[in-house]
Length: 342
Image (cartoon, rainbow, N blue to C red):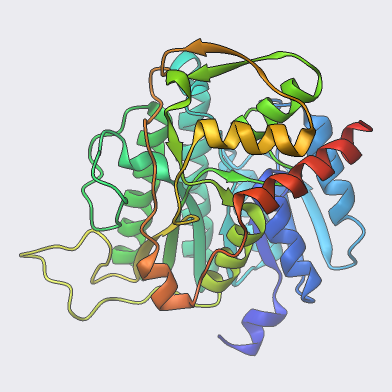
């Protein structure tokens, strides 16, 4: 990576979001200049997003721009003015279940906006784009752990389909224009400043307030819960290693994990799936109160199990998740109490 690349600001989209906030903060802590972009979507309480931004505003190297990446003109202008050499694209419309009832925002935020980012990278001479994909792309697959070499042509939600579309779009730009791009398939990220629509936050909030929790499939659901600090470390390791063509890639026996173009995809997970019942027990212990439970069927679009094979990421970057579920939940509950004054 050139000295000019290091001197130029890193553009982090979704900087007011959960993972974006942590990645931006890590970059700032090591002395990087960061331009954060977010539209402060009301998908969940924007007050939490504002609170994250207030944390980042304390760093002299942080600059924030509020606009919607689905606005092609605004996105193009930002790329021209910021002139980033590295881009971490984490902005998205999240939520598997919401995509079933309100699908249109997912196309604008996850497909149209990503096209605008790709165009900005293409015309701006960006040296490396790291972007968020999702474990949801594995869809109907039942062979675990999920490998980047698995077929991912059977999504079970529109959200998953948009993330698969992002991977295909990034690959096409890598092939056509030489844009170095790396996609990261995140596996159930949790931790301080987390999203209030995700299980760890929902269960903690309900248990702390003495409210009932709805538990899918009797708690016999498995997720590869991954602590956010481990995820941020993985993103920074990948950012420092621009994707390169695989000289051994063969179109007669194509490997979905690599390419003759400078494009890669990696799983980024904890490599240790946990049953939902165990998650609830760990939260109960951290909060100091038992949950009141009610059962519900597995919702449409939800996967029964996720498990990440992270061998490629570990080999190429030295990534190794370091946070146990107990430690991660304890830190989350401590943050939750401080944030809510509980």
